[in-house]
Image 1 (tube, rainbow, N blue to C red):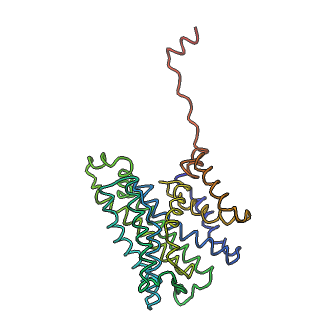
Image 2: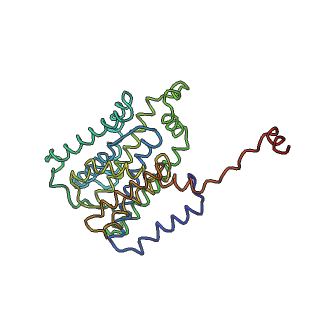
Length: 324
């Protein structure tokens, strides 16, 4: 399950390309949201699942990327220039945020990143001269590609899907490079990794920076997708939701964010038939899943389809005693 075969990837590609032609505009919006949030969840999975650094600030980086794109495009900057600058800004901030990870670990680090998320939220809400505060920013333009507008919901979905594929391929390559192996070593045993000559300081900072960059790039697509952003969209709820995606899908598994984001985006919509109780039903389903499958949905599939090992052969002395 960790490595999907070419046929499974081909089927997933055909579904991703053909699905928007079968859906209404709101359905296309939902799968576009899935693509955007999957990018942010991949970044958090890189920081948490692979490098083992607990971050509760991914929602803040989505907000930084979204506001960067919204403000720069409103000032006349081309979309993709603003998109890249939003990711670069998050890279720098993520690198700086990684410094507390050099001194504190686990739940202490979670509190530090929670405080950073709250700080970003307060800046977005109170600095009206820059962010327009609670009034928000509306009407972020969608990009044009080779003279073709992507204002249509289906066209912008394919932009989000293409960027998701590119960033996923880059992450796949990186996780199979020496960097990826260093991140895993950092997660499993940082003291042993240091004793083997691994520069744990640099790789800790890099894990935060790259994960934050993916969050910022997701925010750069989030702003033109929803076309109205305000501080409340990037509060702690966004960070908790992204953390839920990583854990439910399968932390430390490459395709975990894809599955987790799909569940987190679609399941609440399906549960709306329960009217005012849909959030309670949704929360209960997630709790049941975590109780019976703490390794996530992909962990459940791995356990179900893992070939059973044959029992070890009995020792010769035991066989002799049995035959007597």
